[in-house]
Image 1 (tube, rainbow over the protein chains, first blue to last red):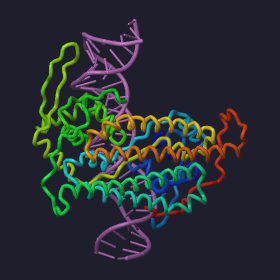
Image 2: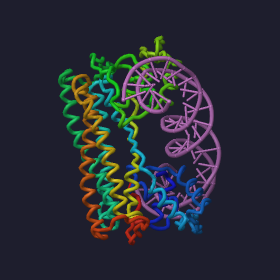
Image 3: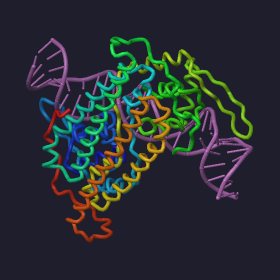
Image 4: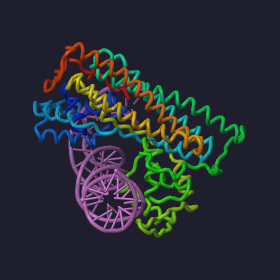
Length: 203
Length: 203
DNA sequence: CGCGCCATGTAATCCGTTACATGATTGA
DNA sequence: TCAATCATGTAACGGATTACATGGCGCG
C-alpha cells in the first residue's frame, strides 16, 4: 500500500489536516511507515483531484489557515480496494548492520561505538512507543494495539541482541589487546575469513 | 553507507563479478540491504571510473564473458572513510503492518489471511538464514556472525509475536460470530475507536 | 520446447527526501 | 533574541526498481 492508502486509512479515524496527519503517523506507524511533508501535501492534492477526499479551509487568526481533509465514500472504496491487493514484502535497511558486517575493516573499538549509537537509537524508539502505551490501550483498535506490540517486541528483542553483541565484541577487543586506548588509524586487516563465494542458489 | 561502500566491502572478501556480488548480497545481507542489477552494474562502472576498483574481463566459452572486479588501495581508503561517517537511521517499511493497522476496515478474516501470508514470508526468510548457518559459523568474521544472529533474532521474535497475534485475532473472529465462513464484502465499521488526535509533541 | 541459469547493460519511471519560501506566535 | 510550533506548498535532486535487450547452454 502506498502513501495514498495510508492517508486514507488515517482519515477513517477522523478528519485531519496534512500537518496533523504527519504527526499522527510519526507517533503511531512511524517506525514502519514514514512520510515527509514533501510527499504528504502533494498526495493529499492528488486525492482531492480524484475525489477520494474533500477539503474545508479553516481560517485561523494568529496562525496559518489550515485545510481539513475528510474521507469521501469513493475514498473509502479506494482504501478497501488497496487493502485487497497482495502484500508487498517488507523492506528493511540498516546502516548499522552493514557497518557491523564490515566490522573487520575497523576493529572492535569502532564497532563498540556503532553499538552504543544503535542502542541509543533503539532505546529512544522504544521510549516513544512506551509513551503512547496508555493512549493505545485505551483508544486504539485491537489491530492497532497488535501493531504497537510488534514494535515493542522488535525493539526489545533487538536491544537484548545488542547487549549480547556488545559482550562478544568486548571479548574481541580484549583478545586484540585489552588496553588499547585510541586505536585510531590502524584498521584490522581481514585475516582470510570470507564467506564462501562458491556457494550458489541459496535463494 | 550507500551501495558503493557495500560493494567495496564485499570486494574486501575477494574478487567478484557483478553477478556474484548480487548473489552474495542476497544470501548474506539480503534482509537488511537489497540491490538490483539495475543499480549494481552502473555503480560498479562508477567505482571503476573513480579508481576504487579494477576490472579484468574473463572470456568464457559457452557462456557470457564476465568482468571480475578487484579492490584497489584507493577503494579500500574510500571504504574506510565511508565507515567513519555517522550512522544513518534504519529504515523499515512493512506493508503487512500498515494493513494490520487498518484491520478494522476489513475485519478478522482478512487479517487472518494477512497473518498467514506474513508467517510464510518470515519462515522463508528464516529458512534462508538457517541454510547458511554452517557456512557463517565456519567462514564468516565474528561481526558477520553477529549480523546473522540479528536476523535470526528478528525473525524468531516476530514469528512468536505473530503466533500471539493470530490467537488475538481468532478471538475477535469468534466474538463477531465464530461460524462466519466467507464474510466477504462486508467490512467492519470503525466503532469510534481512534488514536487521540489531540496528542502532540510525542517525538 | 520452454524455462532457468549465466552475465551484462541501459532507459524509463517512480517514489521519495531535502531544501527552500512564507510568516505570525509563544516560550526559554 | 533565538528557537520551536503551526501550516502549507514547490522544485531540485537522488536513489532505486522495473522492464527491456542479448544469447548460448542444460534440464525436464
